[in-house]
Amino acid sequence: MKKKIVLAYSGGLDTTVIIPWLRENHDCDIIAVCVDVGQAADWKTIKKRALDTGAAACYVADVRREYVEDYVWPALKANALYEDKYLLGTSTARPLIAKVLVDYARKEGASAIAHGATGKGNDQVRFDLGIMALAPDIEIIAPWRTWKLKSRDEEIRYLKRRNIPVPMKKKDSYSRDDNLWHISHEGLELEDPANEPVLSKMLQMTVPPEKAPNKGEYVEIEFEKGIPVAVNGKKLDGVTLINTLNKIGGAHGVGLVDLVENRVVGMKSRGVYETPGGSILYYAHQELEHLCLDRQTYAFKQQIAQKMGEVIYGGLWFTPLREALSAFVDSTQETVTGTVKLKLYKGSIRAAGAVSPFSLYNASIASFTTGDLYNHADAKGFIRLYGLPVLVRALMQQEKKGGGKTAKGAGKNKK
Image (tube, rainbow, N blue to C red; front, top):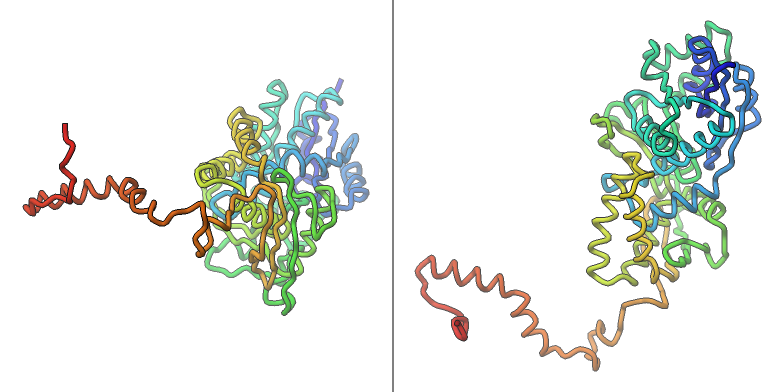
C-alpha cells in the first residue's frame, strides 16, 4: 500500500512544485488540502491544478468562521501585536491550518504532512509546532529544507522542464499571504530597507492614502464582551463584519504597515501588510478598554498583549501559556461592551466618541466643576504619601551635601 501524504496546498508556485517533487522522491499518494481562511482564491481552478499536477485528491476546507471566532477574536481581545505594529494576520491563521491538516491526515490514514514553508521563514515553525502539538506521531515533510532548488527562478524552470504551467507572472512575484484578516507582501524592492514600497503595483485591498477620498467617513463599531458584533448599527457575523470593514477601511487607505521585523529563526525581514478592517477593530477595541478597564487592569493587560503577540507570532498557539493568557484576557473582557465611533481619513483613524454601560468615566469626579465625590483638599495628603520615596531620597541627598536640614516633621515619631 502506498504511503499517503497530506499537502497544505495553496495553488501557488511552491505547492505547485511540491506535488511533482513529492511524487518523484516518495512512493506516495498526495492528498492536497486547501484551507479557506478567507483568501481571494478560485478554488475550482486551484483544485483542478492540484489534480492535473499529480495529486490523488484535493479537498477545500472552509474554516472562515472558525478562523474568526477561535483565532482572530482572541488576538483582538488581547490587543496582541508583534513588535508594536504587526496585527498577526499570517500568524493567527497558521495554527488553524495545521489543525485542519491533522484532521485530514487522520481521515485519510496519512502518515505524513507536507507544507511549502521555506527554511528561512516563520511559517515552518508555526506549521511544525502546530502539527507536533496535535499529532506527534505524524511525519513532517518540508521540501524547502531538503530539495536542491534555491530560488523562485529555479522553481519556475523546474515546472517548465515538466511542461507544468507556472501559476504566476515573474514580474509580479511578491511573496504574498492573504486571508480574511490581511494581505502581506515580501520580496522585490522590499528586500532593500532603503527602498520605498511601490504601493501602486503592490496593494490589493487598500488604496494608497494619497488617493483616498478628500472627505472623511465615520464608522461605528459595537462590541459585546470584547467581540465586535455590529457595524453602523447593523448586526453582522464575524466573517461579514471583517469583510465590511476591509472595504470601508481599504477605501480610506487605513491599516498599512511597513515593518522590518525579527523572525523567529533570528534574521530580520521586511514586509508590507494591509489590514484595514483589523486596524479599525484594534483601534476601536482599545478605545473601549480605555473607558471600561481600571488603571491597574489596563496596565497589566498591556504586558499580556505584548506576550500574547510574541507567543502567537512564534507559533505557540497550542500551548498552556497561550491558553492561560487567553483565559486572563477573557476575564478582562466581561465589561468591554459598548459602541465606539471612529473617523477615517486618508490613512488615519481617529476616535470620535465611545459609550458603554460599564464606563468607569464619572463626570462628577472628572469635571472641572467640583462634585460631591471629590474633595480637592484630599490631594495634599495623597501626594505626600505617594511621593514619600521621593522625599526620603531628597532628604538623604541633602544631608550628604552637608545641608543638615530636614523637612518639617520628617524626623518625628522615630522609634
